[in-house]
Every structure is written in structure tokens, then in C-alpha cells.
Image (tube, rainbow, N blue to C red):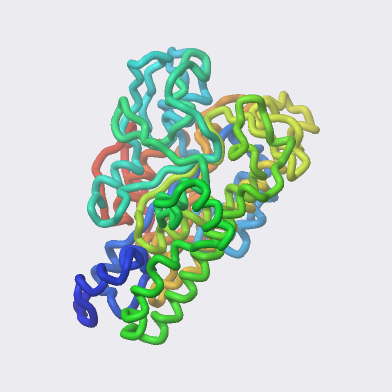
Length: 442
């Protein structure tokens, strides 16, 4: 069936701005269109993990989830775990200290970043941007980049390394990191618009008190199109609109919520000290809707910048994450690190659940995606970059065999996994960073 057997392109575009924000609709989708919507998501966790409670010990499909990963039990069949993948280029290799800057700067570039705090920065095109370039023109945004922490690219942030490396995992080219959103409201309004943007400040305040919605701007214009859709598609749009409105209300209420006092540090502004769990789930919801509506097919989220020293008061952690990662085998610090690891994975599990809830024909959004969660440091106390904690979720529309724990030869480049991902996503590349082969994911 042709993509527009039932509707002309003109009709879809005329149906308000919502036309570019529809979820998967059986009435207007073709097999080719579905095939082209394979998504890629990258989630960066700083400071490594407590490996004994993280590492999957068994190989193959018969494996047990260790303590830190237990919250992933409902998704076990959609996951792959990897042992012995590393980033040789994140090591010092003669450059001395600065492992945290190298961890974030190398995570998706697989390049030895230049040690400098000046303007002569050099990393490399990141893997997400390689994918974005191959998908250029398919979506409103080639890619979207988000971060739980703010931070610029100027100045020195880690042992002579530029803040550009610490604050970014996504790079357009060797000298230019991608700009990223660290405010949830800005991320939402960039995707779906601000219904009060044309109003003055006083009028905006009044409109928000009336709970003006982005949906109000397009709902009336989409009524005619709704009448022409199948019942299942009408239900799907209603579900999507309900999700969008729910998220919009939560974003609009950001100024009213309570903030975590223990999350505050002197250089943080109000939006950055919002309760971490509330904020990260909002970002996960924003990403879900962005992928669902094909606003983009490539996005990334930094759970913290390289060497992040965020404190997680909501789970009883009073000391900074980076400080705790230098645990020196102190049992109290290790217990707190375990809590942080479990906390990150619990929120990651929430994201996977959100993706699975979005139906796309006989599959779902998670099935049609690849979601990489990982860190470029194994143990923050050792600053090592081998045997990295890496999880891959989703099967790229059936192109990836899931539900396995796989062990590779020591020092196998993580970039080899990137090649396998690119093949599964239908955007195959032959070489990336320090790759020396392709990991076959099928």
C-alpha cells in the first residue's frame, strides 16, 4: 500500500502542526516507511559502576541479572550484555591525568581527544552523528542531545582538558560539539512549540494559569483528518495526545515543584537542582514522544557530565558521585555507589517501559530501536577503560538477536559494537574510530 493511499501529503500537512507529530498510523504507513524508522538512543552514565554488583557472570541466554540490574527483569528478553569491550583511546596514552574528560569525549567518538583547554580542541565525529547524517532529511531534527547538567565548552574542567570534552558526548566534527538541552521546558518547547510564545510576559502568565496547551492550537484543524482514520488509529492519536498533554502539564508545573536541597551546589541554577529522578524521567518522556512522532530518529542523554559530582539526596546520598567513585574500597562509599547504580538502572528501566508501551503495528517502539546505555569508565576508583559496563536494548526491527550475555576477547574495541549497530539499523559503515572488526548482532 502506498504511504498516502488514504490521504494526500497536502491533507496531512494541512492538519495543523500535528501532521509532523503523528505517531505510527496504520492508515498512512507503508512497510518501507516503517523500515526507515529505526531509532538509535545513547545514554551516558559518568564515573563507572561498582562492577561486582553490575557484571553479568554467565554467558548465553541462561544468565542471572546481578543486584544492580535487577530492575531490568521485565525487559531481560529485549537486552544484550557485553563483556570485555573497551575504549583504548580513553586511556592516557602519554597524556597523563584527565580520565573523566577522556571518558565523555571518547565515549561516542572512539578517538584520542587532544589535551588542551584552549580553542584548539579536537575529538572526532561521534557515532550518533554518523547515524544522523545518514538519516538526514527524514525528520524535523537530525538528532537531539540532552544532558542532566548544564555546562559550556570554554575553560578547563579536568586536568588540562577543555570543558567541551567534559560536557559533551556528541560531536558534529572534531572541533564542534553538538549543542544540547539541559532544561526540560526548553527541550519540550523546541519539539512541540510554546502556545504562549507570541504573547507578552503578563499574557503568558495568564495563559499558563488557564493551562493553555500546544494541543489547543492543532486539535480543531485535525478533527477532519481524525474522521478519516481507522478506529485503531483514532485511538492511537487520542492516546498520544493524552501522553503529550500529561507531559506538557508536568513541564508547565516545573516552577511549582519542590526542589532537592541536597542537590544544590554553588554553581547550579534553579532548573538544575530540581529533584533528579523527576527531571530524568521527564527527559525520558520527552525522548519517547520525540521518537514516537518521528521528530528525530537519533538522540542522546548524559546522566551527568564526565566526572559529575552530583548528589542524590532523594535516595539518601549526601556525598558527590565523583567523590564517592574514588572509594578506596571504603564499604560505606561502595554501598552508596551501589545505590546510585541501581537508581540509574531503575530510571533506565522506566524509559524502556515507556518505549514498549508505544505500539507500532505488530511491534513497539523499543523493538524498532537500539538503545545503548553505558559508561566509558569501568571503576571510578581505578579510572580504567576496559571491560566497560554496556547494555544494548531493542532489536532494530528484528535485526538483532536479544536476551544474551556475550563475552569477547579482552580489549575488543567498543567501536566494533558501533559497526554492528550501524549494520542492524540499515546505515552500515565499514570503519569507525579504532574499530578492528564488526560485532554481528544477528
